[in-house]
Length: 247
Image 1 (cartoon, one colour):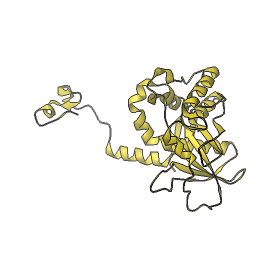
Image 2: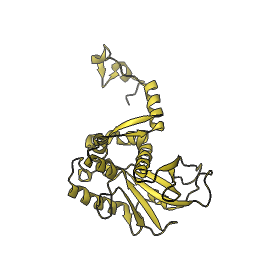
Image 3: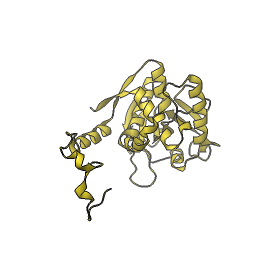
Image 4: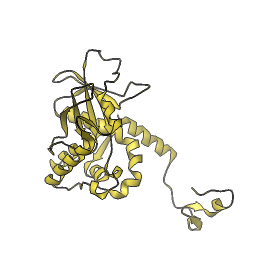
């Protein structure tokens, strides 16, 4: 199994506070963001006595697709269709979007309300690529057609319509195939763990492990080359002669 120990403080700092990480944020999210979101949601469901019985990747092969499905058996059998969005402060392009890992409860509460107003208006998402979670998708073929399906928007951002601590909440919808939708906030969940003095959490991330395995095969750190001082920005000066392009 491919388990990782998550440094909660550094993850929250990376997504919510570290301006210098902007250059690398999309790459990190591509590497692990979606799987991290599903793993954190699964962990939260387990902690709230809704232990997932099965986690699926999306079965769709064409058209609109979601990021995953989680089936729970308690308190009633439900199949959650899930869309993960790892949008962080880096995407807003403003330091005002920062939320310090050490922010006070009042600051976090006000931030949650403001952030939610950016995501949701009049019973639907403001972003079209999030609105699709409110459309009933083709569920895994192994599941009964009669099983209850409910949507979850799994967001990184610290959000809550009333600024409350809960990382999981439900809102009524309009222009939707469902009467209501659940929202899970990764940032809010991890901040609650920090408030309870939990500093690390172990998660199973097999896809992320495989990607890191490939990177380790492709790249390995080495000693600085002896002729490094003759290079320009790490590129040998010979490569800057006519016929060679510096990228």
